[in-house]
Image (cartoon, rainbow over all chains, first blue to last red; front, side, top):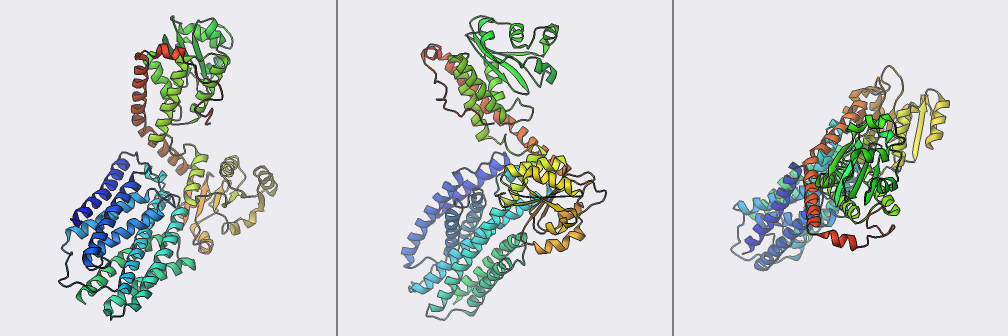
Length: 261
Length: 356
């Protein structure tokens, strides 16, 4: 039953993505509210799924890789709904929808929804640590999307080839401001999540600790490079994409090691 | 009642011909001498058109005589330049004109403001009655829908406005941008003025002749910089406009690399409108530098225009829907209701008077 909610939710994201593609192809894309409402509908269904699953497992639903991916997709949608309209990044929805759809589709298709034979004991610190880290990942994902939009816009300006999407994308300065804020928010949330991990009261796998610290160092280095003006905006945008790809891989490592443990 | 439009535009007449018929903007002559029940004259730099509603047929030459500044043989010689659209063709023509589809620059929005002004003038003088009132209100609605539902007005189509649009796409808010004009030419002055109109306040002018630099700085409300100091200014400014008559590039990737290192986190937009070019094209390869010469600005303008043309089909569809709907309104016998309804007095128009 709960998977049906997730399938319908994925449908909402797919609908937003397909509609954007069709409009872009017809060169008729306008920001509009459709994407926002489609993503909001998808988000409500995701929340319902997570709530049902949470009641079923008796804790925050982050007990296997399937739930981790769904929670990550939910965090991305949450950050978009909070950040997208505030920064007037209407087109960000067009980039967010496919990412959330892919994360959920991957979770639904792959055989990773492994139920634990015994009920895992509730640990509030562990749940807080995991959920905060996931929301931070959501911010990093949005920074990655804003980075992609920045590089796309920058390329059009450099090559002097301005497509119809050029007029829909925000100015480079606004995109860069959004990237910087998302990185700071993600880093702050991740730091809180990381620190809370030291209070879980049970030994954590070494690989998990190393991966978690590696993600923290990675984003810390990007922010430091930005703060000290060592990195040009274009490089920061590119690093946001590379950083999120690396963080996603490390997340796999973290979850995998946690499952073995 | 018969709705028709008689006029000449840039499609059918040159500016000299259009001038000969653009003098008379009063509808009195059309109503008294031609016997039009309702009449409106739309005059822009590209067209002179009469929209009228009549019970009897009014000839094109009668309208032309009313429009002419003076009656002479040339008026009769110009007769072939006039076009005439009746009923549905007239409705469609007006909707296309108001939407900017019939304009010299497709999608320009000034014509809508001019149409609104013409309508208000006709209403004040009593030229516009229930037919023209309904027709023009529908035309404004159609034009508004075309603008909001298609990309027909997207993108700048002149060199100056392209430069401003690009600057806005790089920096967002232009009020904090610093601009350096290198070479006090007329084109750079125009570009600087366009940027100022979008909020730029810090303008610096550097020219080989300091006197000329001061003169232009005075005109645009900026400050003059001695020519030998312009390279240092490049580290500070956000937008550089070059138009000197130098035979070799003043700015190359090599001599600019050091300056660029000091401003790694700030983009630089260079508008090189000089011929021969003042900035080596390789500068565009540097990180954070966006170099546009006169050809690339022109190319962007053409791309925007091509983009607008691609939207024409979608705009025509919207117009066709409105024409059909207008036709149905008339067919439903709205004549009686329209004639008895009082249209809103001046100042109570549901639409703004001008958008130009």
